[in-house]
Image (cartoon, rainbow, N blue to C red; front, side, top):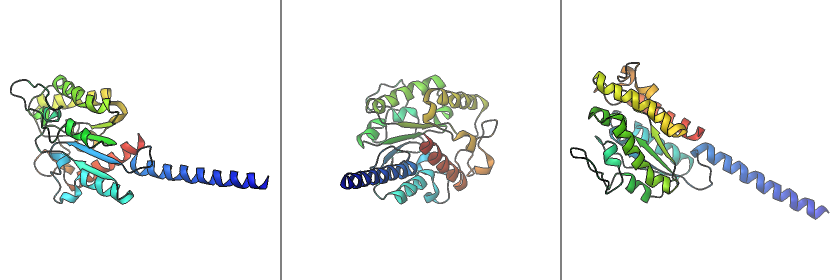
Length: 234
């Protein structure tokens, strides 16, 4: 009887330690597993690091540093390119209408899934609206972008649009896209809007890097905090 109780005690200890380790890992990465996490970021100039005076302060670089401090085996692969839109992120070979950019096979969703990531984050703040692409057009592109990841059961987080100094017509696109992002992506939506935009949709002057488009070091710090908070929460 004593041996049985001892064996049961050790089994309970092992189970408790396992649950504790799992809990710590979930808190640090937001993922429900015990192995290192791999994140792929798709997007445009904000995700590529434009805005901060020190590139180390860009939100993707902050996020990478944060995860590596948790586990040196964690990885963040950044495929973002300045000026990119939803069209650039479309799966390789997707037909696009005339006068629209073609998918970039080295920086699109097709490339992203080849890394077999645990999470994909898409950050496209405003270029589609700046080019006059409608909300319907953008959402149709997002549907196509999401398909390869959904088929592989890879979670995709989509950031809301961000504030930008543009015409009222283009800002209307941003407002409509913000609402649609929440409606379509639900708990996979990451809210960058409340940080970056004023009530009119223009860039928050407190975090304006100076060009009316990109956020400064402090703004990127807040984007990073939002990424950590919302991914772990979900």
